[in-house]
Image 1 (tube, rainbow, N blue to C red):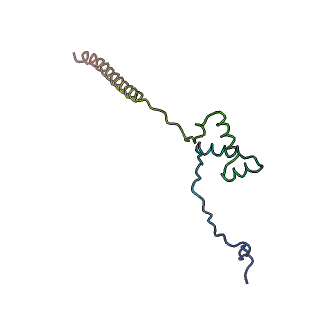
Image 2: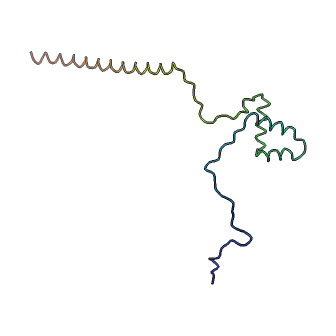
Image 3: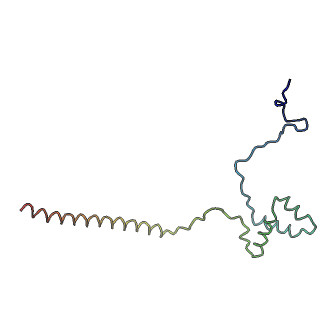
Amino acid sequence: MDSPLLKSTRTAATPPSSESTEVTEKATRRRFTAKYKLRILEEADACSKPGELGALLRREGLYSSHLTVWREARRRGALGELEPKKRGPQAAATDPRDKQIAELERQVRKATARAERAEALVAFQKNNLRGAHTCCA
């Protein structure tokens, strides 16, 4: 006798899935070139019948907001902005003089500290020499 609790919930209408349900490690961000963006904008501008624009967006996997942003950039004449931007903090241009300045400042701090130690040692020796002559005489 089979217990109703042990019966599988799968029926003849729902065969086991043969499709892979593997999940990728990390999704990659899509980057569109300026040439691609201009081509899509030209195709979108050529759409005149109802549903053509939606078909274009579905075919290319785009959102209407992409077109809005790209059209605004094109209107401003900022074709350079249509290129994909590198993400993350921007590397500051290093001036070779900055490295030299930092090295010289380090040398000045080192020399100043050495001079202060030498002055303190001289002052200590002066104080001890005065006291040494009075006690031994």
